[in-house]
Length: 165
Image (cartoon, rainbow, N blue to C red; front, side):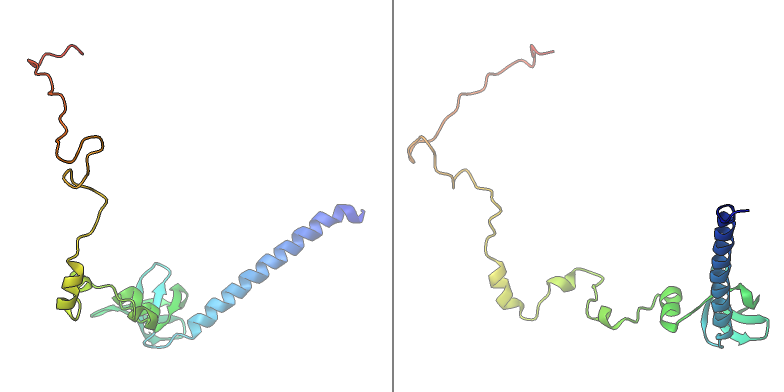
């Protein structure tokens, strides 16, 4: 057999070796993550349930899923160990981000319009705002002098019959 015929088999074996190696690394990281669990840690199970760890044993984990609800899971059923900030954000809806504290959006719009010295701002805000529309009295007549009013032909009165049907 020549080297050319063995080349596809060598490439296939090399690819299988690399895939199993990366899978073993991921599995090892998951085992390390599960071994780092401590009571009080927030976890997510592989089923998507969020809970707090109460007790860690060799093969099992006792979690608190709510008031008076304690569940016993196998250690390999824990999908992720969450940080305290991430667990509180997901479960309790508590945001603990320092830069978001400065950009808090109020629940109602009334606080956006209120200012400290409303008397000084009220006079500045009372000015008329030009929206681009002009009244007929404000427009100068183009062809007619200012004293004459421009008249149009009176529309014809009909009996309601229309020739366009």
